[in-house]
Length: 211
Image 1 (tube, rainbow, N blue to C red):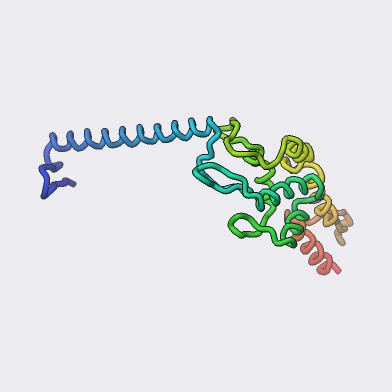
Image 2 (cartoon, helix red, strand yellow; image 1 turned 90 degrees about the vertical axis):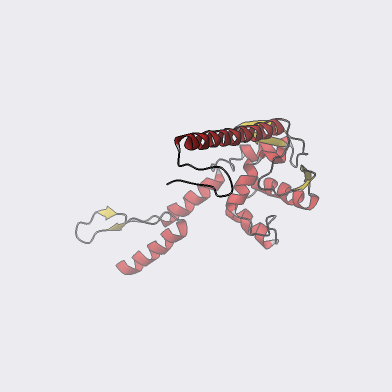
């Protein structure tokens, strides 16, 4: 396939024209890569200085002049979530309490367990900015203090251990059951779904079928 420009002296029908085309494409690729490198270097330098460079806006903050500022109404909710994580037995319990009080995310969506876990891991609330696994002191004020952050980390909520994990394990254990085969008399356990509620439903259905 050849290209011939009608309004300009440019075509790819000759070897010299194809050479010029490849040279122009190489310079265009070089300029694109240099521009991308400059942008990455600028973002890295800004994050090192503690500047917020965009992304999902965390609950409790607003943006003014490219800086994070505390939204006091939302900051109170963020502090409550972190404090409740050291008190509540499970994330499901927290979600129910927050929904009953009418609390939502910044986009007016219902708070979920995933949202709570992300907030417990988000060190922006400590006044820090993350870049490639390294945290830098941010230019924005912190919402929670060091004591609250340490209490959340030590409670095991952020790692899925402690009472939050055990509550799910207990519910699965309550649904575990075994029955004796009418032919061999050996006790066996049928395969059950992984989700606790589905396990309980399957247990009820199989019990009724055996009866």
